[in-house]
Image 1 (cartoon, rainbow, N blue to C red):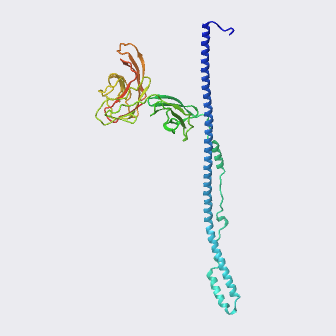
Image 2 (image 1 turned 180 degrees about the vertical axis):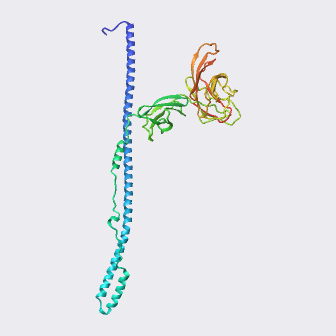
Image 3 (image 1 turned 120 degrees about the vertical axis):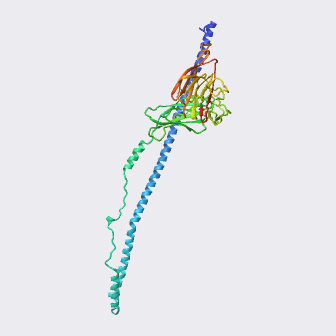
Amino acid sequence: LRGAPRDPAEVRFLLQEARESIEAARSYRRELEQRLRGLQQAREQIRESATSTRNVLEQHFNDLKGTLKKLLDERLMSLLREVDAIEQESIKPLDECQKLIEHGVSTANDLLQEGESAVHGDVGQQNEKLCIFTKKALHIQLDSLPEVPSLVDVPCLSAQLDDCLLTILKNQIFRHGTVASRPPVQLEEFVEKPGGILVRWCKVDEDFIPQDYRLQYRKGTAADFEDVYVGLETEFVVLHIDPNVNYQFRVCARRDGRQEWSPWSVPQIGSTTLVPHEWTAGLEGYSLSSRRNIALRNDAQSCGVLYSKAPTYFCGQTLTFRIETVGQPDRRDSLGVCVEQQNGCDSLQRDKAVCISTNGAVFVNGKEMTNQLPAVTSGSTVTFDMEVVHLGPSSNEGGNFKLRVTISSNNREVVFDWVLDQCCGSLYFGCSFSYPGWKVLVF
């Protein structure tokens, strides 16, 4: 090629630049294609949601029209029945009066015929007929007439129809229903938990004042959504989640003072890669739930520490104990984490362990700290957070591995450094209760 560089190093440099440009073009193309897919998904979401909204509106207003027609027909029939009842009740005495008058007319006709026959009859029988006629006329009481009511005294039916109903209905119908371009609440964040997912959501409509939030989820896309939380909080830990399985979540809200729920947020997928925490089965003195994440101190006399099935707690995670029910407290009770299992101990208030007692005392390697947390009660949540702050040669404190530990309970927390003589990638958790009745959930 005319003008092409002939220095091999320069050729290699240009080839390298060309390859990098090609790779950059590929990356750029992939990014553009991904954005095209994002645009397509956005377009599909708009079209599908618009179609769904049209169907919902048409179905709703068709139902309303059917219901209104049914209600109007029922009201019309009720009013017609009322007209029939008034008509029949009012006509009945008139019919009886008419029968009485007609009977009187018939009697008067007969009497007239008989009287004319007596007056104009045969002279020989005239006296006898006149006597009989006169007695009969006196007996009939020709001066007694039935009373006929005047028109002002009988019902004159009419219908009173208030035209303001149409105005009220018109105003209500014109205000009925709204179309929103975006739901007032959207999912914000998913945080992996062992055997669970912490779901957070937020309000995106400034004018929307929520009374309650409603969170639903389903496994995959085949199952139906089911309620998992209703309340005022904007986050919730969904438990009993299988690891490495996609779950769909959606959230809505109810406006303050209203009964109906807002439109659902755009469904989003959440999952966890963390296996659920489990207690060790088979220890006398503790009964476990089917998923082995809830332990109940039973009536057995034996006492000891119930450990986790495996060292499943890692630094950087949050370990949570929730007290479901309480029993009689004891100063040797403990909830916490440890480096290794020691089956001969009856409490975590020992070396290579940090824990909190049910009375709120905090122990580090068996020594009680001066700082104390509130006593745990039914519904209390105790959390442990740890991070590595020192890893190196042995220090004057006698250890070469230091963890920054934060224990929180009832909106209070203590922070301290836990010095160990060995590096610990994972830790066991455990609990011990001297008396029955204590039930604790771990996640």
